[in-house]
Image (cartoon, rainbow over all chains, first blue to last red; front, side, top):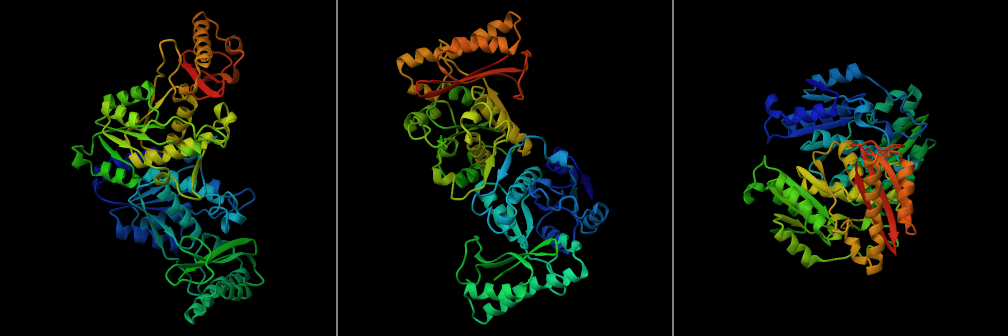
Length: 280
Length: 280
């Protein structure tokens, strides 16, 4: 596994693909991460390996997507373990840039859509998605992959990145990968490391609420209000940022449309923000 | 000359380059314009033809770079003459999209740098450069050229586009092309069409002030204040937006540095905003 920190060196390396036995018409799969890798990331890498000849993973804890006072400084860092995991997963190139490789002063940036970028997680974290889109645009331009892999767990992020790629005519296919869960249903997240034992127990309410919503839909209950109020009961007394039933374009639905629905939850457990969703 | 209005069709067409006798390793030169083509644009196209195998010109009157109340509606439109001029200039592909081909609702956009995008022209037209950078990013992604050509007359635009390309690791070379002038020195601009005969006479003060500044520098006067106050005297009584002496990175200079200086002027003549500059 090749490890590169300089964006221009990576661009050059991927361009000079013949030197690494990689042909012009072969495909590059790209998995951007913020490190603290877990099984969720591994499933993205596996998918990328299935679908492409070469797999590039980036590890970059992107400061611009954290608001002031958020957990940037305490976000888990596991450089050695992450590198090992990438190696074991068969990653070809690990891109591990420093902040100064990616950002300078007084920069051009990407602005999330005025509506869709500032609802749900964007409402409680205004500007968060500007940082996400800015870094993803940079990373996609550096790697120039055939396909890029994002988890469905961050559904709004996935939606906004897909919008950006379409609206900016970018030549990459965005691949959505299913959420990986613990046996008891908790969605994997690097932030789970912050949970105390008691908080982890509380956090199970998120998956329970989504499982319950799914069961209701299976029973024929499609009314969004009925489903979300049931979910809110299950989630209480956690602080709820939102419980929403949207179509795959992120427009509100008064009734679940099977095959075109995402039910999304974001709550705070202790001081940790956790989100999850289910695609029906 | 092929004329294409759909961005995806253009992308496809340029990708399927073999069908147009164009090889993978050959270069594409791109000249983005807002139409109302004049000799300034022709010089960009000529340069592009010199340096590339294939030349693409776009004509798109970009609404997002006009502020409310600005001259979007009365901006000169000359579709037939423009098309003819492109043909005569040997353009290979003319990209002529409609607004709906480029923009949808609630979009991701590009934000100019907080400082450098909101001084000079950006100060009197806040948000103007957001629109410029957004459309240029889109156009560059659609055409994916080897080189893109911009006039030095719009020096701040050129500077910000160069910054964007660098900061977003875009694979295109930005080529700066010298300003074309009328015999009496007036810099060519589509907006010159708005000038009455008297205003056109007044507008010559811009070139005179720049010529005078150059003469001062040649005489060894390098002090920025001395030069700009002399220029302001020449420009009076025109409304002056700014007279600035900057280095090529757009930082203010207290003294002219030969080989690294741009002297910039923007004034209003009648109701028409005119800008010009000289690179020393």
